[in-house]
Image (cartoon, rainbow over all chains, first blue to last red; front, side, top):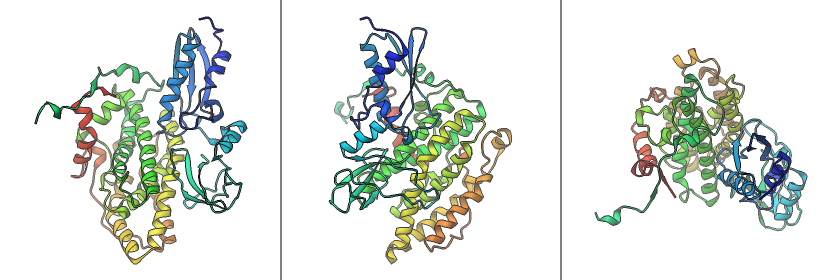
Length: 162
Length: 271
């Protein structure tokens, strides 16, 4: 197979890989895809983990390797980098909109710091009400909190600020 | 008793080289010792918290304690991996093939789960400590340690919030919940002091915070939380625990036995 072996074309392919837990978000939307460069014949793709223990990271790395290999890149390496530290502020606007349409409230602004934090209201992705309450800061994956809407009474996930 | 007692597990050769090359940073001997101590703290606590999954008082707590355990396991993996670059070992070798006296975790982390109150009291002390530790360590002159700390502190902030919310709820709840959290704090408090003791490592290695520098900020947060919950600071005698030099309580052995049995029974197993 012939392919243009450039970092730009490799980025385009890697950027289409989705989060296995939230398949509407690509790793580019998430801000997990940090860098793609050529080192000789090797494509080096740098990813940064969302959460330290996130089990989806290995899957994302494997998916990038498979996709690039299928497009003719023979030698692919994944580097995981912790610095600079991933933040939800890197999430694209397109990613935020897709999350909300998918039924997950997107991350908001930074909450106040201190041992007893205060956070702004989170909008219900189903009915749009701000009358919601946090059930737990921990949800179905590391990145999500568990909320409940007091207007439409539906439970929902919130991609929490990080 | 029969051949059926042997589970069917695919055993492959242990591949050591693959993992060792995954980051460019190689730790010095002192960085490795520092990383091992705090990495073992997280590993042991992660292993303990996993027990609560399916046993917590409510489903949301199964998820919360499970997620906290997962974060801690992530911190432990990063720290043990980094330590392993100096020791020529993988994170799995360090986690599964060291014996009790080779672990460097502090006694607080091996204290039993107890009732939910004890798990929350222990969680308050560990998260208040780790929050301050990682906050200071993020400014370390060691890029390896600083990177892991900057990542970890954001997650520990959620762990501390979880513990604080529960302390307030239990202290302000029924007579029973209040007396249980009081008792849990009294039983857990003696293990704080060990976290703040300097030793020869900190005299040699100045690139990371001295434990004694964490005492005031950690105690100040704990006192703030106790005041908010209208709880008295426990007046207890400090434990003489010395996990940082491999001297552990009787609690660590059974934790390790459970954590390590599969890896030791089937070295290199994958599924």
